[in-house]
Image 1: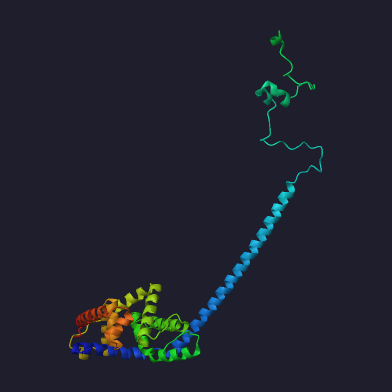
Image 2 (image 1 turned 180 degrees about the vertical axis):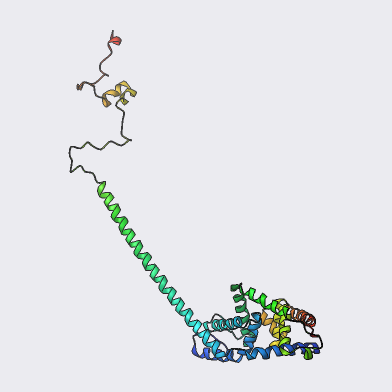
Length: 141
Length: 182
């Protein structure tokens, strides 16, 4: 690079700045030691964070285990409560039939007369079939 | 010369020798990257050494060690700047203080200005330059680097570095002229 007077002047100015900076440059030892201690601090910080994370994990695990056990106990108690008590009280009414099998007491009216004998019983409790075998008096004459 | 894992004792020793050799220059460059703030420059230099020690910055035998180290310092200073946005307030105060200082008489730099004022005038003029031009000026005139080496430090092409260098010189002369330094 060719130098010219203007560049030389700039170089002188920068040289002056450099001399002043040199006087206040910290020693290499200071900065090197500081960097080394920062490295150690960073290492310790990492270790600290590692320990903290491990402790948190353990706490979360214990809490999860306890809550799981508690919910197990609760569901067990609910299951015991909902068990049928038939063995204890034999005179208790039978459990109501489900909706799928339930029939209205007058459902037989919707059926054909020849089906009545299979589904209905006379109200008076007689064993005879009613009324498919009994022709109506009005029709018989 | 190649520095591998920072945990290796041999490499650490070589690394230390190289860093110690360039320490003064590195501090000067850190000062430039930190707006002439000595405290920050020292922090940046220590962080740069830490990066090298931890192996986060690795010299891989490409180009000069000094060029690589300067690039590390520059990157560290830039990261630090981003982190410490509040520091800009301090820098603005510093610039205001420089501007508030009385203007020189203009009887020639050597007669009218003492050395301290010359330095202040140069720093003030440098602070008025765009970052790239300021960096190019610092690398070439302060650290005696070639424009090509400056381009390596700045991570830009040689042509771009030349442009910054020429424009920087021109602007610096203009600003110094305004300060009475012809």
